[in-house]
Length: 435
Ligand code: NAD
Image 1 (cartoon, helix red, strand yellow):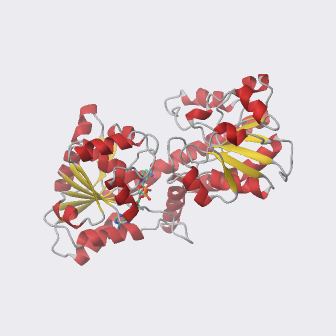
Image 2: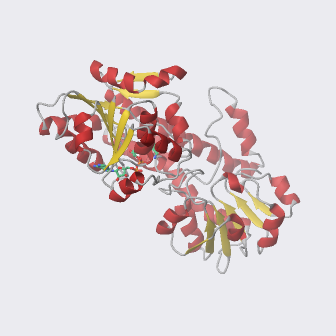
Image 3: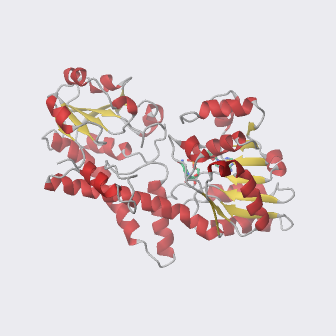
């Protein structure tokens, strides 16, 4: 099959490279010239484990192309994917669909022969109807079907997630489009991946329901963690004890500083807005959003409290990890973007290290002293905060750390270390929900 992928970001590039690896001929299109130039030079604009090899192999084997001008690729395509951003719209919290609609206009002018237009971007219910209307308006003669095919990959494990998903969701009632989608994902039938065919609106809602549920699950365990701290219980054991119940499941029960990232914050708010518009408010999700926002902001006070201080004037905090999770350079809505400024507002100087996110973080965080490694970030600090659980922070040399810190205080917002071990090494240690 011939695929055109509009938008070559975290989702478009991974999806495009994986479809090429399935054997399809894929052209990834982006309007950002620097992105396309880098890809043409063989550079990967994002950090995603394994993506460089996957892209290089498929380019070499003549199945993966990059272009600024997608006209020919769209004309030739059996399926055109829309994988552009849908950030929060300024002012009202709804998803900003301007990039999706602009892509639909572009596609409309170009499609040739029966073409499946696939919305891979996360879009609110009814967006597929609007994409269809745009294409019909521009090209009343066009033969096409608009399909919703939301993406569930996780940054940091994106290739594995794309190639071995729990399920693929395809929203269309058009049989020709269903056949094209089945053919595109045929290699997944080898590992018996369920393909869930639904109506388009249902498919659009499945994506938001999934993200909102996961955000709620994290927020639930975060609240349990706060309670654990008050009553002298251990949230990790609570998580284990409930997670072994198959109705609950053990995933997404790691208490932390609050969820962030490029999806959960914007998608929960967008779902809340859609639900309000339709007069069916999602109170649980409204509360999840509120609780999570407050939690991130409260982390600075938690850190100060661990240091037995009310304000942090004249103190230096070392921060390990700035991205919203390990194995990505994505800084969008990372908890660090709330926590670091809140520490600074309490008077602290912040020195930080992130293995992949520092370059992007430098654009988003002011007055942070970026260091070259974890030990450098600890040196001379009054406390060290673990904000993102990169593997390289899991086995730090504790004796060395203690010597480097001005005062041996570690605030572990990801529960990487064992409290008893930290105390044995002579640290003042605080973590999340462990007594
Ligand atoms: P991104 O910002 O990394 O990439 C979007 C790309 O689209 C950018 O490179 C931009 O230049 C390009 N673009 C925008 N308009 C264009 C146009 N008209 N023509 C060509 N290129 C255009 O975004 P992302 O993280 O890949 O997310 C894309 C969508 O997928 C969003 O709706 C998001 O919610 C959803 N999603 C993201 C993830 C994730 O982990 N990042 C996971 C699942 C779903």
